[in-house]
Length: 346
Image 1 (cartoon, rainbow, N blue to C red):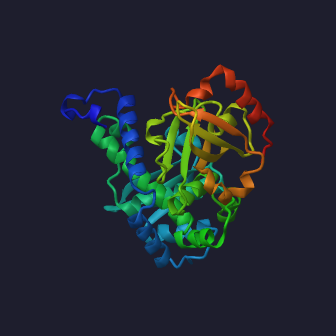
Image 2: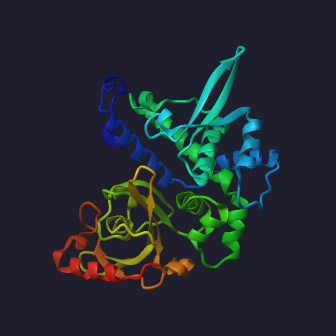
Image 3: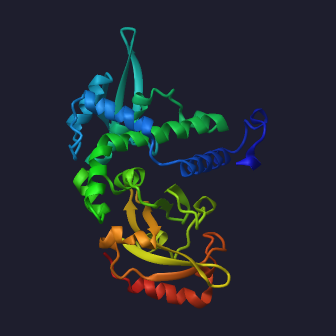
């Protein structure tokens, strides 16, 4: 991001929020320009699974499987009370000396569900597999370079966690053998969270899809895209409350909500038609966010279980904050709200 291209030696005392914002936007943009699929991380994950004799066609990875990997990496796994962990931390990789020998241990919060525990164990194992130098968040926020390295390490560890739990060959086999996909069912089949399976779907599918994670205030906090050129998603930092991505949060809806968006220019000429579906995710601390998958309308038939009664919204590309002008037009807001409120939950 060119406007932040200045001498880092004179910027040591920059506000931590600025460091975080700039580096996270850079990371998101970097992922968008490339593919969400990372062959090197996939190869590393496949190698350790093979070494530990975890079959490629095994869908549900259990704790015993991750303990095998932990044993190979010479790391112990323990459980700890949630209040003993730093605020917001669910798992921790610690090292200590025992008779002059450095040993590692993964500590997992007791408050986690089994799915969350498995993913967080996989995440910490990912740090060991990548052999990245550990960086503490407080240190990382002191400079751009450190925080860039920190979020890169976190991204790679999360990628490996997903790849450990969901083997690429098994999921690709499913994608090739089915004409329509049910993301909810996939999450159940692999015994993983909705967000984890969504990540792996976007990483491994050949479809032209985008995934966004939206906070309760409408800010996009994560996005993965393929080759969608009609909407410049990297310029969109937040979404309108009338979009499904935020609507499920506003209305506190547990079921998946879907919609079509017809994008028009200033002359009201159609320049693109898109389909998306959103799901509300509830966190342990009581906060919520949504996960949304979108694609061109011509590929919506790949998600037939989410198509029923999906309303249509006609919008323009130009506005703030979501770059869609007409969704803020008072004359049509009532129409859009009526369409969304009458849509049947799936």
